Length: 67
Image 1: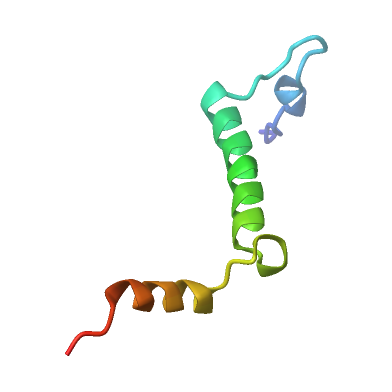
Image 2: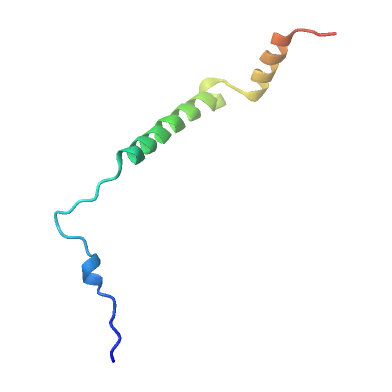
């Protein structure tokens, strides 16, 4: 009795056979890249001028003085 070894030839991809990525994955991939660029530009202080401290001060101003 001889042990059969895995036949790796059956797992090789034939030439000319292409495997396509699902459309949903491509949309997610490009959407995340676009979102990352938007996020970077919007929340980098040296580019947009936005800072957490400014946002806090503006929200406090909007509330007014309560007593």
